[in-house]
Image (cartoon, rainbow, N blue to C red; front, side, top):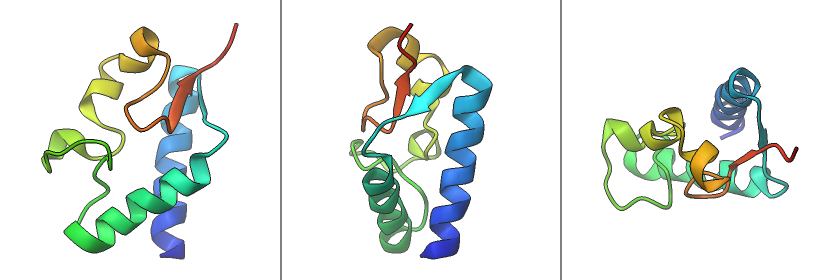
Amino acid sequence: MDSDLENLRNRVVAFCDERDYSLAPEAEKILRDIVRMKETVGDYYCPCRERRHPDTVCVCKPVRNGLVDVMGSCFCNLIVAKKS
């Protein structure tokens, strides 16, 4: 789990840096939930989405397409917009 957690954290942090987003204060718990999802169903699927599809793998397609800019956070509140 530790290497999966580190891999996922690195992926999400890189995305946040690229888009000027932040991780939410409760990010570690959410990251662990996503890693458990990988252990259970085979990939880092968003725990807040019912559908298990490549578009729902973290960082999911809606987030890559700007959901955080519109809503202020992703579906599971892992990634949040920086406060101005």
